[in-house]
Length: 111
Length: 114
Image (cartoon, rainbow over all chains, first blue to last red; front, top):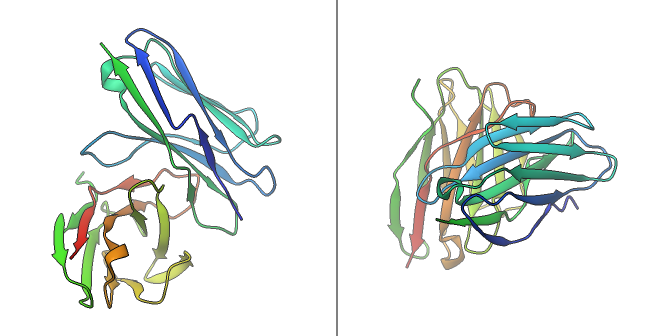
């Protein structure tokens, strides 16, 4: 069973705070790990695709790291802004499987 | 470049009916995946099509089926609708279905079963 766990389920921060959340996945037979941002009333938007242990990706104030040996990825947001409010989803894939999504972390940034 | 287009956006049906949802991928994308999202659940994978062939299938009953046409457009059909089928159905396309490529999602079809 390919369980993808995300924590925390929800997070409330003040504008300007930096924050991070976790995606845990089975460490065996890893193929790829995706991060998506899903804003209310919009469609999920791809942030990062990570494939190699130790990968670090950055897009503006958002960055992500990957540890395939222990089965986790962190997403970091530096200096959160109200427009960062969204649900952040991670998805995991092995070579033989479909894409398995976590339930997401809902981030609310208060001005 | 136009994004992924799903039609209709909203649909209301009654139990026992059937429904067909449509997804037009980004031009040039050959892989289309379908997902179901219900309240409190993450995205649940339904199936993936690539070059008109179903390449992967999730753990859903046989009432859920799909197909892909030669222009990569895909349809999803649900027969004998049940109340629990009320959900947001999302489709996503990628260039070749390689999981190193990000998926591009449509806005979804919200299906309500009365």
